[in-house]
Length: 286
Image: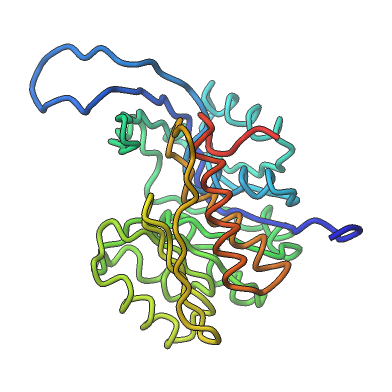
């Protein structure tokens, strides 16, 4: 809408330096030589993906992440800030998170954590507080260090969005994040009972919940309007499926923030995801 200030988006947690390796098919689990289709180095992880896609859609985007004191951190800083995103970085003594992702022709992924970073680390919340206070939309990544932001956001009265990815319905790691979510996003990859799970969450007070199904589309549930199911937007050529879920989130939340219409938000999510999978990075260039 002309003259409307951009959405202030904050993504808490998750930036890595990724080496993307493309293969016709995944290698068998035995010693051998694999000839690849090529490789690509770029920024990865869910927090970065959401910030990049929000910025791509015109948001005033901020990202908080832990980075090491190393060359990979410098590459992440340069990439993120070149996209116009404000980066607030804490220091991880274990170094910058690094992934090596094997991608096959179907877009499936095997992710190798070359450096997983610190799993238990106290975060100084104070430098992030102004960004939390001014944010219209706050996404909290399901990393252990991000748990420390949840009570602060609750005290500030902020609405929290959480992506639990391929949650299996049982992993206790996710519970605190699930219960804190006003806007809940997930994939149906590991949970056949995703529909009843989301119905339970909305009945418990979650504002709305969305489950993506890859090329099969997505389903969303809001207490006021019930279920909305949409197909995926078809593309001529898939370049890289990394970031598709983050892009769906960004498209959905941007539309929802502006219109509060479930069907339009779902369609916007699908269209943004389609744009992302045609890019070698987590989000398309402007």
